Length: 125
Image 1: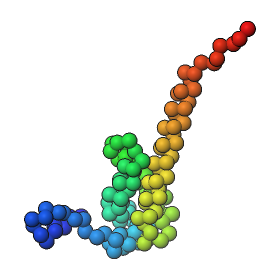
Image 2 (image 1 turned 30 degrees about the horizontal axis):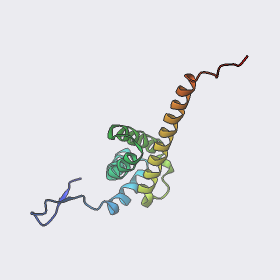
Image 3 (image 1 turned 90 degrees about the horizontal axis):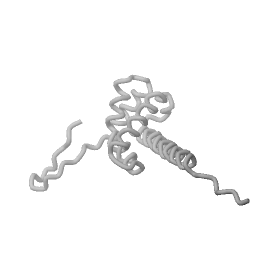
Image 4 (image 1 turned 45 degrees about the vertical axis):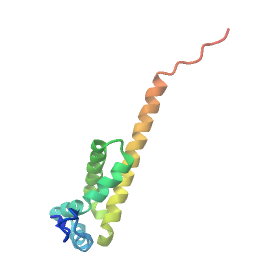
């Protein structure tokens, strides 16, 4: 997908093309489990998913990792896409839940690690 330049060359602004009509068409094909079309759907909504993950992650590398995991979950559950027009919402919900799951794992890991180093209070005799 190519970026579309702003008509005003002095502005220096590069805008992304509107992908919603194309997304609906691609999502309809993805629901038919065509891998190529599904990958196109992921590319169309890649920025939205990554932006969502950046809101939950500590850094961009972690956000990219979580986005990749969300893409894999979406690919495994492609049959769960019932309404092709709602593909963006569907992908973003998967990404959101992936991020929340990762944060929960990290929190539980820190709590378990912290619990391993807590010494019991000294007994009074």
